Image (cartoon, rainbow, N blue to C red):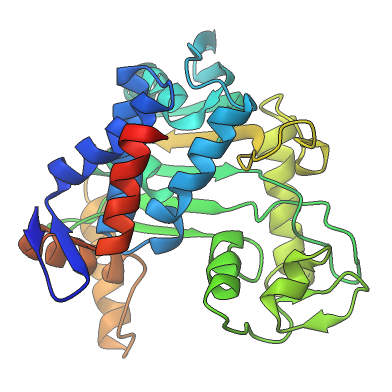
Length: 342
């Protein structure tokens, strides 16, 4: 740990992950699962994904304490086809289920050119890009999606029936970091909406509706019985519907509208499902694929596009690796308290 400016603490990634691991251990999560969750959360904070970094720790801990999620769950991997895997997360977190499934996913993708992983009964409470980056760095194209809590209403609707239902895509790029995008199919993520409410900020008109179905720019009104809206109207709504079908119906998980943790005060995590698709782009002699992608991205930059998906994330990562991950001193002491006294 190093002191930053006034009110700031800077930590290296390993120290930061170790602190978060202690929090999960104190909450009753076994060491292997604790390390996986901590590394995921630390990576989000390191790379500037603030809405999915330590902001989520309180929700993780509260969900564990409530009994809503089983931090000790042991996922069961089922090999159900030449290129199909079904994993039952056993009401545990999605990241440990993905970790135990990835070796078979990689093996099948290498053998058959593509493979599908359907995870059910899982809680995904983070960004999707950390799930896909290792696959892209192994040379695979990867796609993932996850359904969530019902906090999004369809266009014209006033009742939340879908989750923010994020969709992510990753691809290798020659002589570069992978290109990865990861976005909610709602106008904004629920985490960003909650951060805006916490900081007293407004959001763009049209981001959501209040409990009466009226458009609102007040995060507190959207959160209090209202709902976010899909981005792009019916187009975003169609993508969100696709995610519900693939990440819930296909996996065997609950739809966002079926998630009900009313009997578990403090719970925040969605108990639904996640779909991951991996593709070997070099199959059939397409060895130039990474170079072709690099050429396309350079064409976009030459056209005037100043920033491509994941540019900001990698820039934040380089800064964090050089200077340490910066968090407020208050946040640091709060994390220390969670690691020792819950």
